[in-house]
Image: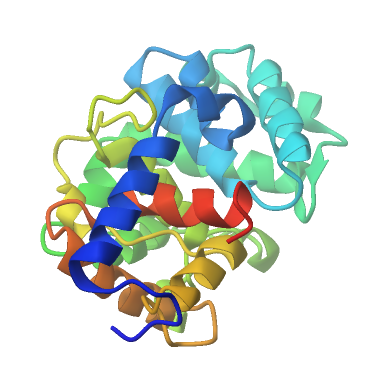
Length: 259
């Protein structure tokens, strides 16, 4: 790993560990999309709220939080019950909902797809974990295949990243971090026990990518799956059991310190 910053090896690990400790704390939850699933206590409510919040997690953070909260309100603050028992007539309440390119029609398909997953595939954790024993990439693609098996329109399919076509899958990787990591620090949930943190991939966005390149953790210029793979391989050198913990450090450095 070559970098443009004056740290390498153990010094780099020490620096990132320090930033991980700084930013992995509940005080940062309030301004983050992960605050949405933190409103719930039931496993299925948490994972559904997290999935919707992660799906629309692009753009201005206040807008993300406002719209994710609105979705939960429209589901009567019981997302699992709503997913499992609502019918087409109940979905009129989403008319006019829009977040960037995610609109009411996408919400409706997400409800249908999640109904299918919980009724016929054992739930979201089971679908992801079936193919994630060695690495999460195959699990992400397997989930996408199951999620889209009811034949959505192409515009809705675009909201579920296709890693086979080199998509970075930032929001799905972030969602998996929330569900899988269990460090008991009050931020990530750690409610999915069937997937090891060691197989996860680091979410990659504009901020974390910029920091990773400055630190020499990433050389690829495009924010795509090849970059995600390169970054995560380097993070595994620093911590093979829990490489994605450094997402806190990279994101915190980029957003809060303008590193």
